[in-house]
Image 1 (spheres, rainbow, N blue to C red):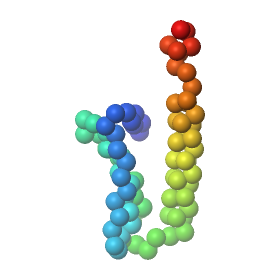
Image 2: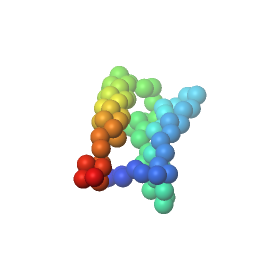
Image 3: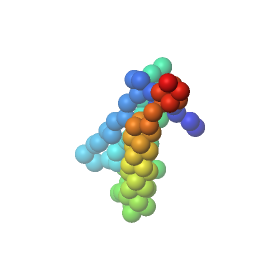
Image 4: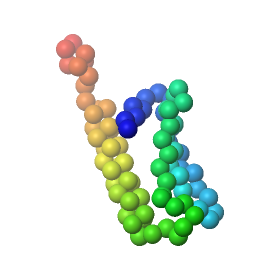
Length: 80
């Protein structure tokens, strides 16, 4: 699965008092992705916490790379 986020894309974490959270990615045009644990009503396992931490680490790397590339001149700027 590949999602190409642009204008209008959003990411939301839905939390609940007694069940595992859902991470939702919504894109314009009705495309969406939900990430949740295998059994949302079961106790959260150490493996689930490890997955959530790995997700955060990769998201932080994604942000850092996007910020780095955002600061670079575009091909049009470089040609001018």
